[in-house]
Length: 195
Image 1: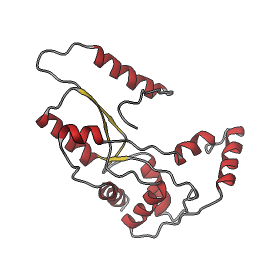
Image 2 (image 1 turned 120 degrees about the vertical axis):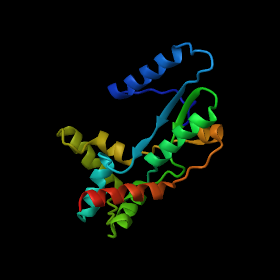
Image 3 (image 1 turned 60 degrees about the horizontal axis):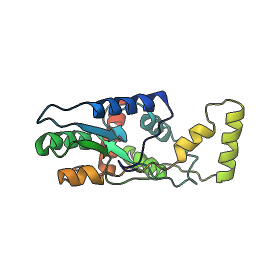
Image 4 (image 1 turned 120 degrees about the horizontal axis):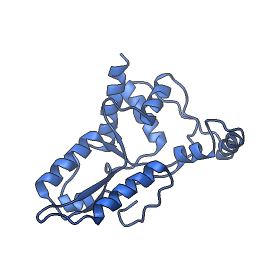
């Protein structure tokens, strides 16, 4: 995903974000001012609530991750790297524009589950059920209006790789935290919150 791809949001949340971007881009900036629109991928960090926390709960309870047959890649963004980008934008002040923000490495959900296990000192269990069985269960879930359905399954298994090339080149930076380091910091915070 690069900044040149035209967004086509389908949710109210996504449409409202795009409307806000379009509104800002339509404004005439005062002389000497710049506008930066940041499009971060999934942000995580200490105190994070959401899907990463739910996955942590499953792994910490020893529940096997059943979607191991799907080798998707996803981008994440540590809050440390996001803060670093904002600080560098204020210092460097590159051209106005829209910038994706993501950690350098996209990882699979299987890798994420393994990192969570490493972070809590427990070997994560990843089951590789045949894709056809999982897809069939998703279809049944859709028909029966269950929480696990085709839409949720697609979200859990699809690729979502975000390019950070434009922001890094514009600022002339390398990120201080790797994807794995950032995730381990977040996981450690979950561990401390549940102690």
